[in-house]
Length: 264
Image (cartoon, rainbow, N blue to C red; front, side, top):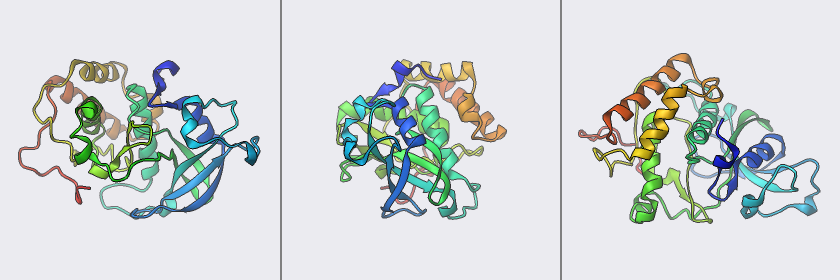
């Protein structure tokens, strides 16, 4: 597991957020619009914390397990998934695996995400990210300050085999940090990469990105990730990571086949 000090990034104390998301009482506030599967906004309230003692979502930088804090999350119950021909039921486990792998890489691209038995059964609960929803990949890419983060996400999406990286799945949070959400269509053992991030196609892979992925190769798929995937999916993940490092370049799409639809 990544060291705790390495997990503190993007104004979020990940360890504390995971604990609150894992143990807090879930109250469904409503269904999220524009979702193909059942997706709900929930309040996450620590049972030991009186409702009069809640703190705002923006106070996550100072969140610790012992502090009295309410937060909000995105709850995706497995019973609300629409059946897919190319992915088995249980996309919520892939959402969790995506967070865990991002955390192990110490990139912290994905908001903290946990497994819960919620009001509508088992599912994933991800920390809700207040964001400027007018922003997306195509607007964010115009700012060079975001390029390092987006390059990491580009490499990460290749490694996890993201099948649906739309522009709108990249959020600019109100704390001016970026987050990648909607990672359920990932980790397939067959290559299915579909993403909007092709601006660095064929460019040299930065050394720090290659080194982080090499560390993952040396240590193998982390147990916390492997327990959520099949053996063939773990082997394919390792193969993609090795191929990316050995190529020393960002992936390319010369035929234009590897784009999601719609793009945003």
